[in-house]
Length: 192
Ligand SMILES: [Zn+2]
Image (cartoon, rainbow, N blue to C red; front, side, top):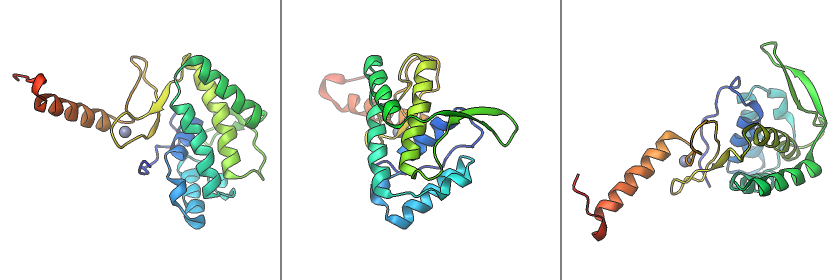
């Protein structure tokens, strides 16, 4: 499982996607009940919604929900992405409501009942925000990091070539390793 990393500033766009991606990158299956609730509260606070942290966070159910989401992050064929997200919207979609952000701006979000658990909240928010991002970008602009041993989920916010790595450090690490392997291999003798 990927290691947790510091979460981004809460005022960054796109809000829901960053939260969902941070949740997907948590090693829920390795946490006990108390640790899962603590991590959930910390992630909620880091993304600007401390009240969200009060929802019941079950490690096992969060592990199930995030495994489903990782399958979507791994998919790039548009027809398959759309089919997966439509299924997720049918199963977990919530009505849309307006909410005012701390800085005064208005945003839409799924109206998820206060009694739903953290895992159900994640499924509903993920279905809405991934579907919106897919429609906006016209492709599954996300992925699982291609660096060996990383596998972190990421949102591809770039405008050019599809992103393959979660971070510049993973891209550099992989490029350096590939270059070294090429120099070591008998057929790949480079002269620089
Ligand atoms: Zn990575």
